[in-house]
Amino acid sequence: MSLRFLWPLAIGVGFLATARAEEPLRKLIDQEVKAGWKEEKLAPAPIVNDARFLRRVSLDLVGTIPTYDETLAFLKNTDPRKRAKLIDQLLDDPRHAAHEADIWDQVFFGRHPAGGDKTRKRDDFKKWLTEKFAKNEPYDKWVNDLLLAEQPGSEMFYVQYRNNAEEATVGVTRLFLGTQLQCARCHDHPFDKWTQKDFYGMAGFFVRLVVGDGGGKGKFAIGEKSFGEVLFTGAVKDQKPGQKGEPIKPKFLGGDELAEPPAPKDAKNVEPKEGTKLPKPAFSRKDKIAAWVTASSNPYFARAIANRAWAQYMGRGLVHPVDDLGEKNDPSLPNLLKALSEQMSAHHYDLKWFTRELLNSETYQRDSSGATKEALPKWYDRARVRPLSAEEILLTCRQATLFDAADPKSAATNLPNNGTEYFMRYLGEPTDGLGEFQGSVMEHLFLNNGSIWSMIRQRKGGLVDVLTTSKDTVEQKVERLYVTILTRLPSDTEKARFVKFLQSDAKSDSLYEDAVWVLLNSAEFRFNH
Image 1 (cartoon, rainbow, N blue to C red):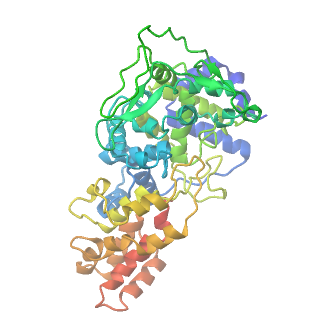
Image 2 (cartoon, one colour):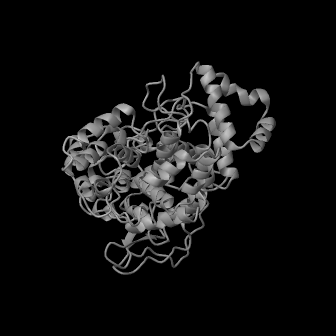
Image 3 (cartoon, helix red, strand yellow):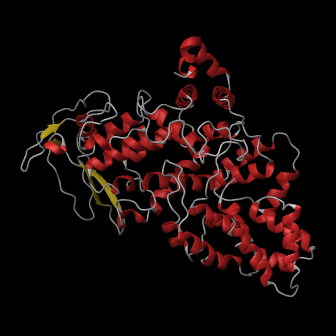
């Protein structure tokens, strides 16, 4: 057994709680991670340099790279607190809320949601989610609103499950409780304590939900019937044709059955009609499950979001995969996960506070190069290297090419139509919980031949136009090229090669188009470093 599992018992719970209250979370993070390195006999990577840090933190917080001027200003800044100030600045940037909405939209739906056409276009949902992040609304508050599904846009979460209580059960327990229940759908879980009755007890909270007409094309409303129970027929292998099931009362996972009063004598189920919403029942199971999931007494909620928020920036959860916090899946650093969960709850699920603490830690600010060759280092002795998501590639290509030079930040809300659908469809799942990445042939062909070319080709104020009309020397133009696209200065060798290429035909502006294309299609541009 690891000594780290025994440490809290050795020093006493009271002392541990006091230490956690006095230490900033960023210091606790570094202490626990360093203890892990010592036990595993690992040498950590050095702290990342300013250029790599700037690119990494910009992509992580606003989903795109900084401008040429922003990069130069940061690299020249000698303020010892410039990294902390940059983190604050990016967290307050309106693009942060939009970027978080992109990330969580993928967490909830993925690239190809089960609801098909009903859930493919989720503009209202993303607008709703963006507003939650813009206001820095506590995570438990907006998750409660999501599960109530009464605010415009929030209903899309249930729409994807198509009135299927079992699918909703799998989704809610996985996403918000970090618990995989799908095995218990057909039989008692072979590797965990969960039984089929646990599964169907949770399903009882969703069995009465109905996806109805929201009063407009593409609009939906979540209604709730007054009656309806989940029928349990035992293990799938033992079921017989025509077998009648046993009604299962709603039961909180690992807890008590729902105390539900008898329905009023005049209560009846009303079928949803076009243009109308179902009346709210006298007793709402939906309200009860939303309140229980987000309650401070819930033993799963804080732990699940602490692990997921950590994984968002570190690439790998302390429990991996990020949504499988079962009894047989021990955290790599149990004391750290406990501290993160406690402080997440103590700070009222303030995700912006949590992010600020994590990104100011030395752990986050390690370089991505090191002895460990794992794509997602288990002990965080170096930073993860991750591919940009489809949304990030679009924004970053626009930022790099100065598609709208008058207002570069408009790229966050004004994407080019050419190829956007293709990007979103074929560039993979950015948050599958495993951190896996495999570039496809279609992705490669598109990045080489698709709408990136429309961004590169000369236009007033674009990067190629700036380079070809500038009075700078070729050497200075190469430096601008690298700083703008890769957020760093070129090495002497890189500069010499590009200068030679650009001088091979001084009258041809197309050489600058080729130079931009080469860097946009480089592996360095495709990843975050």
